[in-house]
Image 1 (cartoon, rainbow, N blue to C red):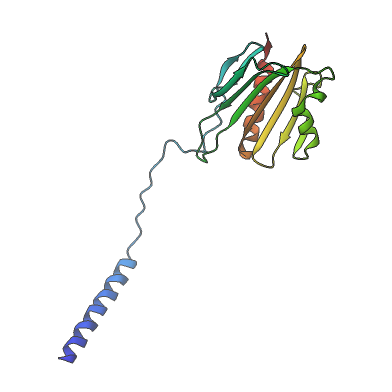
Image 2 (image 1 turned 120 degrees about the vertical axis):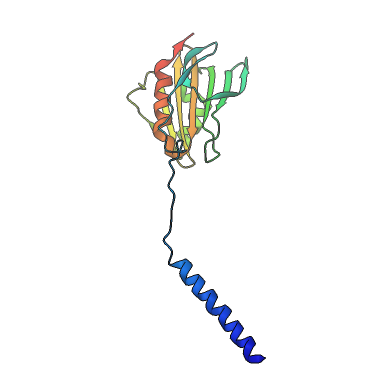
Length: 187
């Protein structure tokens, strides 16, 4: 009886090994399919929409939606708005912030946000061919994603525009800032 059990177990093991060897020698069949919309592979969407407030009008990226708005704040700020784009595949939304304020007697150098950026090493002053020194100044931050802040002057007001997003969107965000600055018409 013991012999029969041993013979039966041996036959089962041999059958299993033969089955595994046969299965492992079969050719691998891979079926390729084409995916139409691959996230991250698309070119940036530079579609624009008109933005207007009591102080200026311009073209902002169409993907942004208004998330908060405070107007009539008074001196030093007249208006604050925050826009956000829908989250991308990384669950990180681009943001656009706009603020309009009273220009201090000493100019932009007396604006608290400009002073903060001037004193913080993470913010680097930038020069762009599309932003003259008489129009305003720009600061860039790249240590935690990407942020481009532009401060513009018109009459006795200043406008702060900040675009931020992932570091790999630097080119897109800079291009969008350029489009916005070029499109501004003062009210």
